[in-house]
Length: 355
Image 1 (cartoon, rainbow, N blue to C red):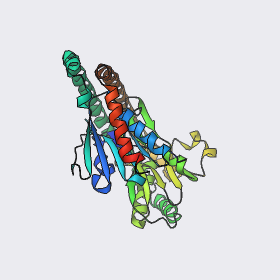
Image 2 (spheres, helix red, strand yellow):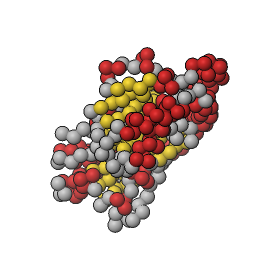
Image 3 (tube, rainbow, N blue to C red):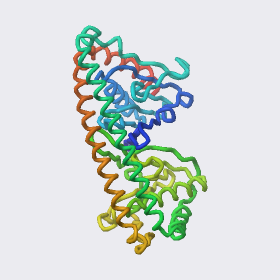
Image 4 (cartoon, rainbow, N blue to C red):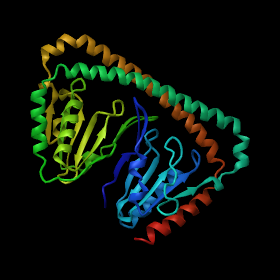
């Protein structure tokens, strides 16, 4: 039985909605990629889940990619042993075939939608869609300003950090990674969503050794960014995930060949050390007297960041409730028997027949 690897294929960040779909679901690297086109609540996530279940039943490992806005829904899967991918190609991650029918193709749900029912609800659909879009836009605006405050807070911490001491610690950690040649891959494990902040423990589940980097006013990002750069320079193969507010910052690293990971946790005093193989306390790299001098400015930046991000979270949660209402309208206008038949046909052709 394979461990279920769960990731996100996009992120809601201070830079707006950032999609990784083109990289993850690259049709030139797959034998077949199917792209689903349909509306909200029409069975896209269910089709993806049923295909994943069928593949696992046939003994194939599946990589799961969840929706960064709604982590209860699947945005896509990859089945490496079959070189097969299935993904949602509707907004906001609009995806169309690059090599039609040669490498990728559409799975069109629109023939299974009752156009008359949906037209009858035209006014509601337009109103809910526009409201959902507006709420997401407002949430993104607050995150953008939260990002400015967050970057300022981090710059203050950088000025209080013993760079030479930190660099030595990073080099020791990088040097301890042996025989792990490969390439770096971005595999996102956290999201800022309509259900709140979500983080998968995929890296920890795959690891035999877990190092906790205990944060101190965001300083853990300095360490993680340094470690990512050192591993890149070394030519090591690793996965990394980035912070959803400040996506330029690394929040976690997993090294497949050595089955070890580095993850940012809370302050050392609040970290349960028994859960980790090793603990790195970032407080020892911070100049206490220097921090004392800028504490007022730092607290102002952190408070501003947290207040703005809290409002962004409230707005995106409201967008989720609006989207739920939109899904209810579409669910009543779908021929789900037709969608199931289409799913069964695709599973027989590309999963069962090739297993």
